[in-house]
Length: 324
Image (cartoon, rainbow, N blue to C red):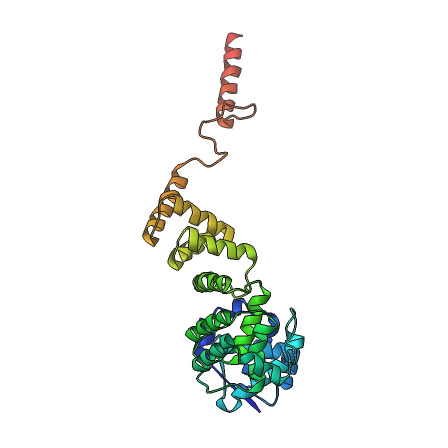
């Protein structure tokens, strides 16, 4: 029997839904349908219509984000299960089964020994189980990640979420290394940029009403608004309102044009942006529209007043009779 506690508050404040795949979201919905309680991972996987490996990966993701938390009675089983499923779950490679004696020999290395001490401190445990020790060691021996890299990542994850386990750490490290973030320097750059952007992205998406995975172009727009233009979510919301009124839909390129115009005009606050918009609307009302006629056209053949033409015809007719 496995049990997870679902944090309702974390559900409304997490940006993980923008990154999660359909399968991972199905696993979360299946977990919620079961009130967090299920007999085995296979049962949860079948309900979510996915594999056991992908179900474990999804649980790891949502546990890392603080959306779910394993019941204290089942904390040890997840780490063991996820290690057994590495071969299917990880596309880059797999954690090979190494003899316990070889793992013990590696741990005796000074750098690894210090790493294990630091990880024990961060996770609040006196020691690790054999499967956990093998998984941590494999990050160094099989994935060529330095102990400093692993310690840096573990510290960041601990600061971000109080819940830190070996399976969460190993899964995250392999995921990042697969994206080319495989050195301490690259990891630090990634952590610095992703923290700020993830918060800005989530707030922009919340205002715009986007609850799906973003395209590369949308991410580029958001990065530009945040880093280049330096606009707050309140200003982006104002641009969203204008775009919705003028286009009757969510148009991020249109919003970008509005925000760019405000930035060029030196707008720095919501009030500045509103004044600039009102100025533009007033100018649009007073300026002649494109293609409009500001001068009366010369009379064209067939353009005449019927009554006036009739009276003139009568005058010509009577004047002719008088002459006779």
